[in-house]
Length: 242
Image (cartoon, rainbow, N blue to C red; front, top):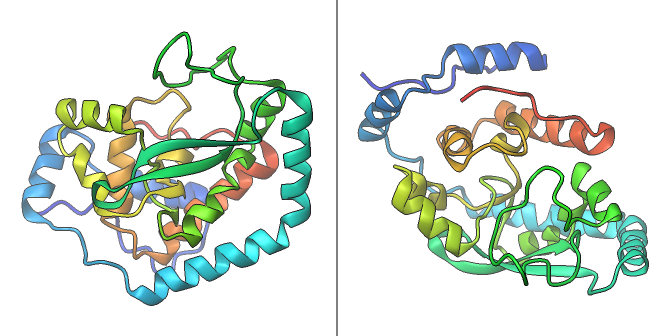
């Protein structure tokens, strides 16, 4: 009997606490349950082309709309620390395709010169003062609207990882490669549900929960709602336990 990861929420009023309760009460987080689910289910087919066309159009319109804010951030990053304004980093995208993700630079120049490839952590001293603010409100991700226009990302989806970490997680974490069956996103269910220092295995469960239910308008609305809330009010994650 396949396991139902998300109940039918159509017609429900959008109360965040109610949504959280329904998702948690219908989700089985133990590994055996997940294995049973994957054996009996496949991802829904690709989203229609018109959906991605709409995303590209919306991303372009947003870039035009926020151009004054975008320009201000360019000046702030440039004037408060040495180095380029934008930061490019190779990531693994849809079906394993490699692309360069764009961000406002939030760390000191050549941050990994001494450490090599490593994930950031709470209190990371490499993060600049303005970079710390940008990260808290996720404004450092704004340049990724260009990635959406280029067809490399979506607004919502699993966050793309660096190939060096993707290879590591694929070898260590069962089903991790399934994240690549959907386009990576600027924000996602894992980003609003998990704390900053959550493990890749913890985030994976939320990424796959979204991947199997990404056609749900209510789920996408909930992710967008919490993302905007985090950006405007520096709110932390919802705090689900996986």
